[in-house]
Image 1 (tube, rainbow over the protein chains, first blue to last red):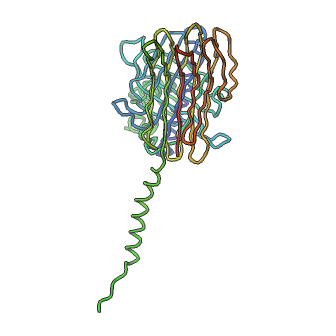
Image 2 (tube, chains in turn blue, red):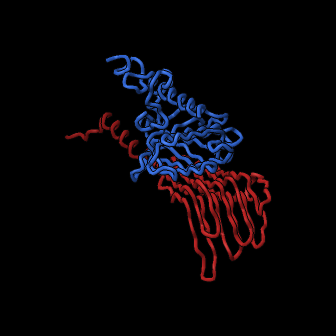
Image 3 (cartoon, one colour):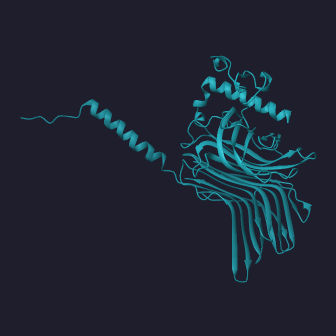
Length: 219
Length: 202
């Protein structure tokens, strides 16, 4: 749990850094993947099976952005079926030895589950570390806000794939994760500065904010 | 005597710009793309014919700027198979098409043969001007409880009572590549494909 929270903190920090650098104006791309990780939420190792997709492209049919998430933890029995994709963010991007894109994306959304009466907010970070996925340690993590459920690990079977932008994807700024559209991925409420990923601090309104902005040290 | 006037350089520049604007998008859309992916296609044969069930099917790609997806939390073909986290995508670009489909926790039972796998995944890639390529991921594949080593090569075939299992089945043509991660045929009983991805561009 602590490891996943710190991972999300790193994600928030990198999104903040990319935002200030203007990197969100870059053409957006696609991430797709399927496979499983080893989960321990139940107390014993089990498979967390997933199928995931994400992009800044509009998904159509009232589902927000293009993408999806299917997730089943065979240890806890949690079964999660996406209903909307609300955000898609670039955490980092590089190239492998063959010049193909690799990197990490943050995908956020809402979902129905078999363990909650109402929809939940979730955030997934997925990393394409090159080919093949299992040997190169593609990574998958999931955080479900309302269930306080967090699991992460290398993809044991399957593959995560980053794909370049096409004419329909728009810019990263079209889908930037925020505390509003990605509450499971971008921390918001706080009591002290330690609750917020650096360089964010806990503002007077008890939400994480950027120092020196209105409501965060400046009236 | 009147002299016919020639088009000025400004007119020619505008004409050239218009020609470039009109011609370039037409050229970019000249490619024909083929893309589709489905997690499961199962045909159960009977005396009166066959019943085909398709789960998580993207449908065909509409063009070089299209991206399609399909998913389901679970898949169930009664008395035949179950699976988890069904996933299928196909994406087009002016110079390539990429398709993939996967099923986790596969449990298949047909004519007395049981087949299981933690993960079955097919991927197909078509690049303009190059040969298509495909790959499959099969994790912990077992037939009747016996682990099956997956070679990674195309069209690995294992014979079962009344039929065969083809792993990483690949069918290539000048216009498309089809990858079926797991294709199970029991003659006269069932024809099942788990993880199918098609990609083509020309």
